[in-house]
Amino acid sequence: MVLVLFDTPAGHALFKVLKEDALKRPDSLWDAFASMDSTNKMVKLKAFHKFEDTAEAVQSATALVEGKLSAGMKKFLKKNIVAKEVQDTLAVCDAKLGGAIKEKLSIQCVWDDSIQQLMRGLRNQIEGLVDGTSAAEMRSMQIGLAHSLSRYKLKFSPDKVDTMIVQAIGLLDDLDKELNTYAMRLKEWYGWHFPELGKIVPDNMMYAKAVKMMGVRTKCKDLDFSEVLAEEVELEMKEAAEISMGTEVSDEDIDNVMMLCTQVIELSEYRTQLWEYLKNRMQAIAPNLSVMVGELVGARLIAHAGSLMNLAKQPASTVQILGAEKALFRALKAKHDTPKYGLIYHASLVGQAQPKHKGKISRVLAAKCALSIRVDALGDTSEATVGLDARLKVEERMRQLEGKLPTSKPDDGVPPPQPVVQLYAKAGANTGFSTAADSTMVPVQKKEVEKEKKEKKEKKEKKMESAAKEETEKEEKKEKKEKKEKKEKKEKVSKEGKKEKRKTEEAAEGEPAPKRAKEKKAKAV
Image 1 (cartoon, one colour):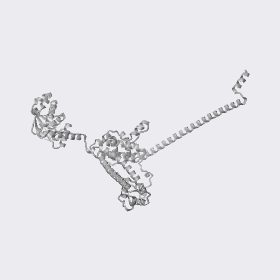
Image 2 (cartoon, one colour):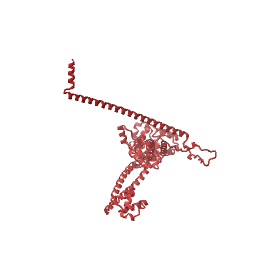
Image 3 (cartoon, one colour):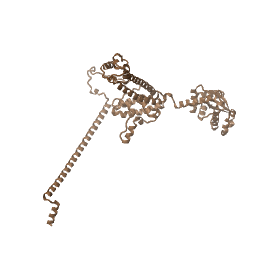
Image 4 (tube, rainbow, N blue to C red):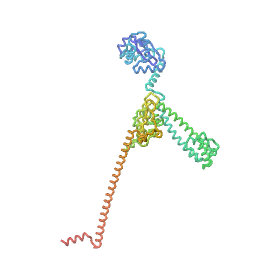
């Protein structure tokens, strides 16, 4: 006798095959499930275990996909086969699952083409074979299980949606532009009435709040601005309001200025709220990237790449120059040096580096960022793990480039013991002054520093020698050129002199010199 183990979206089912001879003809097995009547003659439901919730269904489906035996299915088989000491063969849908069942429960399992056709027929008529569930319920369970299984397989989480970050950083940039425009318009507009206020209160938010509280400048001395401004700024503003050179404005003008102040204040408050939202989203979606470059730069990198997954696919060299594409292609076209950094330039670690080290630090930071992004995109944890260690390594590299001593990190968490400093005044009588104590470096490091200084000095001397040699060669070339020009000029002057002399002689004798030369020659012949 053959039993069939069939997993449905509603639970585990165990069927008994009534016609075993039909399994020998797999090609005609599908006809036995053409109708419900023929199906009932072919198989019969022996046992059914309904899933308690979606989590149990997802667990069972996941184990089935991986060819493993879930806890629920093991309990179901123990209850209905092992406990009853049934010696029948169990038909399963997967060879791996059959091997796991045989290994753990010692149940003989079978899997071949005929079993596949049998499973196909059961799947077609499962709604009528399982009691207690309607077709609509079975369909909804099937869709729910499919969605849950997809989320589990893709490790989908609503907190990992990076589209929110892309939209939030875009809106934040737009708000900054609008706020700057509105604030400049407000200062220019209200400046006609109180021009001195712009220099006294440079902050846009404080300026808008002060104007909203004050209205016209004549009310300034009677109001308390302690909630908005510092005491010194408030006194300076009240003094300037009494001697202001601004023009008078009408009530209608002030009303419009007040409305603009309200817009600036509301936009600033919304911008603060949006920034907090963006920080929280970045901490949830890309905690390691946020540790490395900050929430703002990290959000810009994600927005520029399109998504966190797209950014994770980029190599470190691309992350380094992301945002400087125009400069890169312009440099390649003109055969100039390519840019060393793009959006990553605004990270705090690059900003802390010296100008000559910014390129190296940006390269190191981009390499660590690439690893952090991949952990954020494909990892399971929602906390910073590799980001903290990577940031320490970048900081250590920065200290190394600046020539500072590396920070030693104790293994046991206990800080290394500090050396005992003995004052010279409290030293013993035999204690002499040691000149070696003036150096704060260890001998090996001191030698390396001296060697480096010596090499730098030699390079500098060679450079100066080569520069002096080049200058001498230039001067020699210049002198030769001047001598040549003088010689050419002299020859030119002598030729012109001879020509003038010949013309003078011709004018004096009245006939050309060549003619006279011919006559003399003829006479001589």
